[in-house]
Length: 406
Image (spheres, rainbow, N blue to C red):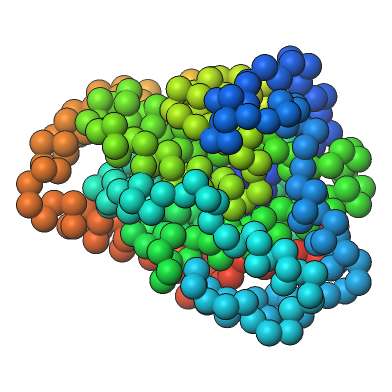
């Protein structure tokens, strides 16, 4: 713990939930022994082999990316993909043929993708951006640091050496999912998801070579599902708990945009929940057996909340407020695992004030122009976060070629 404390990683509060997108892997920890009982009949595919996702990875991307790394092709691939940004943009020339073939297939939306639902999801994100940014950001971030496999992988993979840069890159995907044009031709979600899938494959290959690793193959299908549930499933449950009025169509659309994203990230359709009931059931099975405290998670949380406080109000009393907000979002058990200090003044104040704030805000949402104004404010916050993380430099998701330097 002392050694890790001396080497605290920089991590931003702005893209807190994005830790999951590039950092899911398996540490030296006993695997859960409870059997996998979630039925594939509850999936978007409606059927499947029912194999335990703990032992399933990405059979298409993994050997390909391992080969790219081993033959020294990744730096040139990263250079060629730097300017590949839009969903409708052709792949750049010069890519290795095996990679091009994979990406042509990987970038296709699933046959079950529904453009109408994706459009509805964009409007939902527009009107509920405040809640979603808070829940996918602060809430998802606090949950991610309480996932031992994720917290340790974040430290020992290459991005652990520069967490501001790492989280800036992962936030690119998170913001793409919540954008108004996520899966439209001029959007970026397809590109960011496919790039992230390649990064996952690289981390699987590289972390097994780290002297700090335990020999297991990281980022299983279950690992990805765990992080997935800390985002849309957690967010929807909390909004329901707060009594945010959400129509059945909006709820279904919000689930759908994340279903499509899961598919593009390489999660098999037989594991992607088809309904919110199925998602909740799956979450209840796999989150408890994959969560708990670690020294790395405590350190990540401390730096993460410190950076959030700095962004929110530099030099003020905002850190105690951030502590209280985080504890309110994730509950006492996760907050204690994360080492979040209890705040005797702010804890009860947040718990009392937030439900009233939600009620007040929901009284305004139906008024003309309110969703548009809310979106402008939320979008300005997102752009500020990215600028803060990147220090104004252009940042892209890139395939790593090594683990964290010793």
